[in-house]
Image 1 (spheres, rainbow, N blue to C red):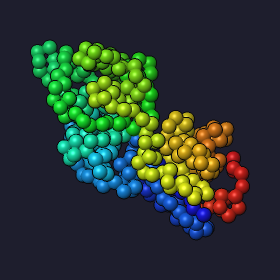
Image 2: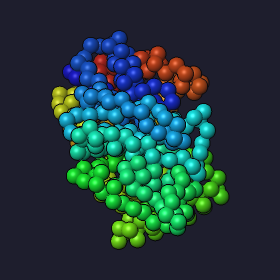
Image 3: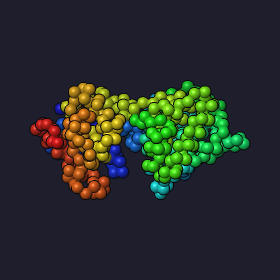
Length: 378
């Protein structure tokens, strides 16, 4: 009897490895099945940690954070494949003092890490783009890889979305040399276009500190950026699904790097060998900090549940809290859910001390699902 525990992070609280270990400890208090621990991610926080746990080699790197302050980050390597997590380099968590910079934050550091991986000999670059701090249309990314963004006087423009209206032309010569022969894959669950009411600025700008006026300005700036890039490439990629990912990093990757866009959770599950880990499993435990509407759109628990359901293996979830209805959980392939708030109604305590509560949840689900299996508690 094997239980496969494959959870994502509890954002702002515990990493996926800590979550899986706590749940496993609770199960072992009740019964001693074979347990396979597999931290997973959907392209956002925890992506590099998940592949490192699966055997990739961590590679330390120093790169520019979202305000150009250097940060110590990590990418991962297996053979000629590199896995890079944007959030770890220039994501929201890397903003000095947590101060949001919606107009000037840059994706430059992501390009620096991609460049380092290419220089190290990697020919396949997988980039998880969740958790970005910038809305710069990926301008910083491509500048770090060799592109020049020039104003009407032929001078380089500044960082961030606010600088994009000053771009009059792009020189892609060095960029094309740098990425020649390199396959770039973006791991993302975002299908938004670059601009418009579903665009990067409108949908995600407020989360990065953009006021209503700033959202309007950024959307116009991104539209101008797309005009300039279209003139240089001869095609218009601003409306492609995923162009709005990571503040427009998706757009620059698609339009200028020839990147492929894939659902983050599907790609990570492939990288960590999830399919093989399902062999012999009688139960899969997945989860993340909050099970809510976003979970249903390509987040870790939904992806894990779909993969397990395809093999006929039951899935239960652990989480901090849930707002999903029984019907929604059933449709997602999750037959039961165990939330920290079931044990501790104080959400602040759940955030501050989740590990002991997860151990208790592990014991509860072991009794329910392994000793006396029954239908959902809901």
